[in-house]
Amino acid sequence: MLARLLGSAFWIPAYIALVAGFLLPGDFTALKPLVPVLLGGILFCSSLKVSLGQVRAAFLEPGALPRLSALIVLKLLLLPLIPYAATLAVAPEWAPGMLLVGMMPGGLSSLAFADLYGGERGLALLLLFGGSLICPLTAPTMLHLFGIGQHVPGQPSESALFAMQALYIVLLLGTPFTLAQVIRGMAPRLVERNQHRLSPAAIACLCPLITLSIACNRHAWAGWTAQQLLEPLLLVCAASGFFILASRLMRVWLGRDRGVSMACSTVYMNNGLSLVVAIQFFPGDAHLLLPSVLMQVPMVIGVVIVGRWVGMPERVGEVGGNSGEGAA
Image 1 (tube, rainbow, N blue to C red):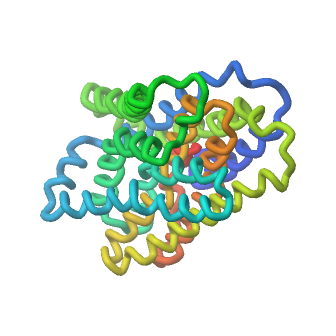
Image 2: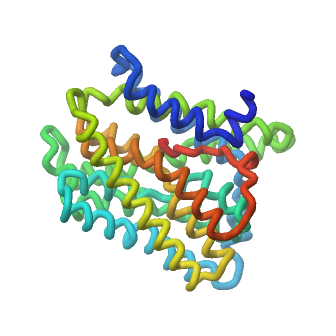
């Protein structure tokens, strides 16, 4: 049972952890520094499954660079603007949070889902690696372009804040990935022997990450009614529905296998990264925190819908990487 909960049924403890974050009594503020550590644990375990050689081989395929460039621009810059603009029209206070989570790169589990549904692994790898590499530049740029965070009292100058955000994202993504590659190089047989333990270990980090990221910040929405909390949930569900629809349309352009890889990257974003960024740079701002927290709800359902569309049987036991590097 435990193996299933840390594997194919990872969504069960993930959703339980999400509810626990809202309902567990007590003050968890002192545990806030553990949130980026747990995110790093998820990224480290998942990065042990990815080698630089695989990324290099995918990059050297004919036409890979122009295709990747176009898809990253679409994924990180253009697609997030649609939910942002729509939210700006109907619920402007939530628009910044929607933009923050929407412009995140694909989560590492998007690679597992692409494999599961018969996507092109090379493109899935490049979307994951390339998006994570460019995100430290695009995310702060978008935040400053739309004036998000400039109203926060006590923040440093705009240029200094830009540099701090970029460096923080680089460290969040780069440190666990670099450490994982060092260990892969030093002890490849050890990594290979323990491949089956990496996904459960990532899930073991994911669940407390979800709970703590909510419990440490719920003072930001203390006293809110269920109806007030329902609004951001409906908004992220609508945004996720848009990403699913956009992915469906992109299959016409990309073809089936590449379309599946792009769909998984688009629908299953690294919302854990946006959450940690929100905690670090926008503490106490529920309108920036909650969209990243609640995006976990439609993301899991979204990749299931992608699987149904492509007509592949679900073998989700092979998945379980970092739903919620996602979330987390």
